[in-house]
Length: 258
Image (cartoon, rainbow, N blue to C red; front, side, top):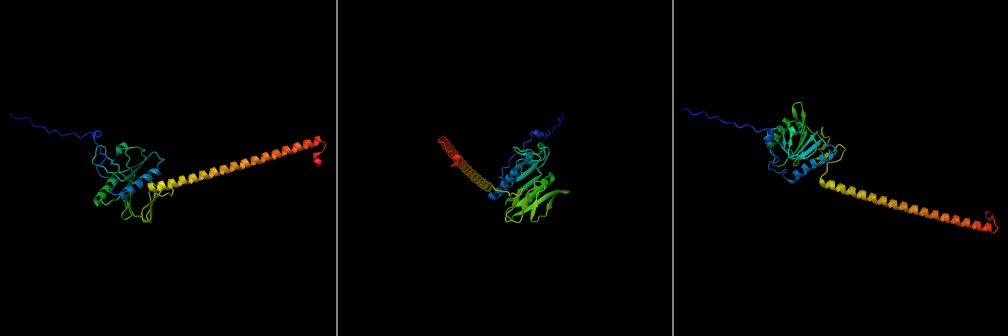
């Protein structure tokens, strides 16, 4: 008797809604204090720059999944900017849930652990998935590299003394010992310490202005009181003169002839 043929069951691929998209790879966001400080400098200042625009989403070290149903294709840029996407909390950036809009601008801050192979793979990822502007900053050498999307994809840009982001409008000054970045209004990107110092200075100036205004108000009040006292004295003198004139008339004298 011939045994029935065994059929091999091929497991079906999970539905996109059943795929788990990790929000962490177990790696630290930054490899050293300088790396972390620069990431925070970029992210915090960009958030302040676009604070009034509800449709600019900015994130640091957030996993970006460009393909629905595929959790093996992902990247977590140090900082990314998605113009046209609403602000809000996300465990990851799933592009199909973001109206299929990729982040337009991506920043990577080099650390000693980054390898050329890793950075080449990131460049290919950002190029393939639609990034418009890609920046790599190396704190060790104070070197900024820029790729800008052209007809053939992301194309390397030869930089001179400064560079202005076409999408964000921020200006990179490459003439200083450290990278200096300016907002479109000319204000420099500031660290949290510098922001705190500036806020304290503004508070002290406002306090001094308030004290000066209070002193001016007190002086004005004193002047008003002196004027009122002078008016009262003048009124009293007028009343005394009127009483004297009345008394003289009662005595038969003409006060106008005296």
